[in-house]
Amino acid sequence: MKSYLKQHPPFISIVFIALLLGFALLVAFVPTISPYLILQKSDLATPTHWYKLLSYSLYIKGLQNWLVQSIILLLLGAVIEKQIHQPLHVIGLMLLSSIVGGVSFMLLNTQAVPLASPGMIIWGYSSAAIVLGLSHWYQSESAERVALIACVLLLLLQVIDFNLTVFLSQMVVMLVTGALVWLGYGKKSDKSDK
Image (cartoon, rainbow, N blue to C red; front, side, top):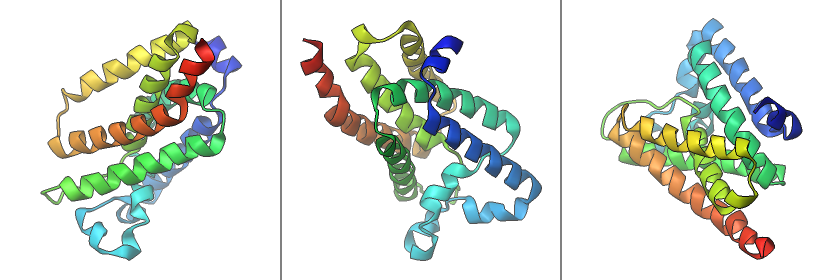
């Protein structure tokens, strides 16, 4: 896997991981900033708070959480960025995942539970990696197949820590991003593989 990452460094994912580290340190040393990052159900009705549809994805509490999510982003990013050669499309996938996940969460949330985590971006990445991995399975390297299997395991582990609102929001993110990635990149492999 190490040699695979050297051959296919996921630059955008690495930049995002560094950004997450910066925000993790900021939250640790300036905890009063947290309310400005965390997404609340009431933020949907307040247009001046819509920036939180992006900021909640930058909130990480603790370096252990940062490390785990960074590893996931690095592995999935390597698969995605190798197949999606346009950096703006990868950035768009991240932004779309954050916004769709945030709006879904606010619409489905029946309690005053906040959302703060890059988890929706990770689920968008997971969906993209699954679609790209399956549509390019026979051309994939073994490291990409391992990342795809890890994605499926991640999905199964989500059921253990079940929160219906978060789970449904994650499924919306996966469906939207998966469909868009399939339309943009999944079908191309059918023509190019023959």
